[in-house]
Length: 283
Image (cartoon, rainbow, N blue to C red):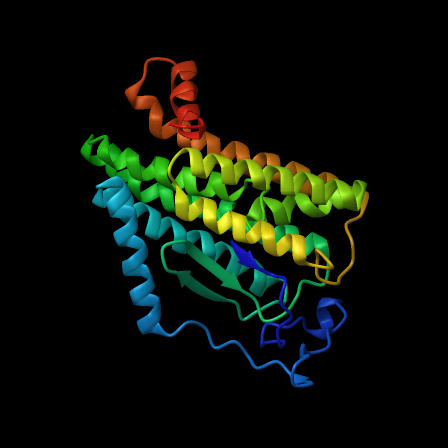
């Protein structure tokens, strides 16, 4: 996930004049009437504790050291994808935070200058995060042990889940501006409906932390006034490109997941069916 909704003080990765982008005024802390302090990032000790807590929860659920390693490594690569995009688009220096029991978060120092930049930041995480599957698939090819494919599937799964258009997951930040381009109410109705469905899925499958996290996010979205930071809205051309990139990223995640399941089944259809069972209600 990425946090691009909170104004931040510009950092050293701000756009240079020769880049052709207009400078952005430093963020102001409304409570103090002064510039917001530069985000120094998560303290290493707290980051380590948060990682251990998250890893412990994953092991409690899965009982697999490979899945723990895959999820933690995949999470780091996913968030680093957001960081690279934020830094490249003048929102840095971005920081990675590990959230105990829930996952990770990438924070920029300021808002994107346009919704198009926000879409690129949101999709950079899942797209770049798939690279984390390469070493696990390489270990499978080298050793022939299918246990490494569990790691490949876990990485594909967490990136695919992040593409769900439910607040505050990356999919909501990628598709939200597209839906709002059609009509602002369409964005609100669609994201809240998908979010409610995701909460129901989590409850029916015993994923209480996931369901509770999304439920709190839905509640906070209902209480918000403006749903999106200030910045240039998507053009129709950018909306089309955003949709195309979202579809391509989703297909890539599904493809990596199918590649992880394929060695254990006889046909592609059986592999897809097996993977779809993960998303069934009341498993």
